[in-house]
Length: 363
Image 1: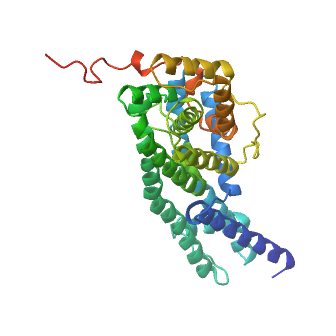
Image 2: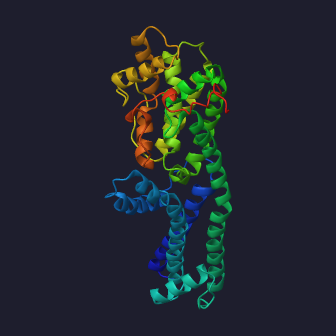
């Protein structure tokens, strides 16, 4: 074997190993690993989708198109692995004596797809073909085996997102959440809400950093988004801790911390820029006027508020600065619907059916 043949052989082996490593990082490794091949595939597919949704002004149309992005990118990923393996083995076949390169490519394709119409006429050619067939089948089987895991995690994520609609409408609003709970005398039950969402954020971080395709899987309804739901619940906890005159619940603090840690780590996996150490001097997208409007609606609905509005604003801003920038990056990444504070701020008193509180019965 000539030195050039050895070089081609090494390149072929490295390509095969790189594809195998990408598959392991994407589906098997139980921790965040931003793989180069996976990143290139998702970015390439995303550029195509961005070209399609670019001229669309309707959010529902963009949502309908983007609902295919995650599944399409996921199905494109094993194709990229198989192509990489096929090219790598073509180099290997060429290095061991199968010439010209076109014939080496045909032998590699026949082995990779287990078609069997070519038997490599080279030293250990059949053993090489067997190994390529095993790798090709293994990668396809890996994707199929992990699809139930992916959809199980998606289903668990969407359960609380769907349940939030009954409390906070859709898109979810923390003002709607608090006014509705106050109306049904449920502010004392916020402890359970914070506890469940703290667990939700913990699982979100674990699943969406190890199986990053889940970030792009959209909710069943266009107005729902896991990113908007996360922001609304965090804002609700920040409003309660800063402005609502009820006993302090440490669970709200813990939930906010679990939330911004999860959002930051997901943002980091996608190499999106944000300030990892924000200070109260940092600006957020919710300004004082929006905050005052939210408190006005809460006050009109009878929600008990603290007297010192200046301190309330400082406290709310101090909470939100921790998750504002990662939330913004993820909203753009997932093409999420409009967040609550960009829409008219309404109370549950203005939207609920008059029969919802049971004050009037059917005749």
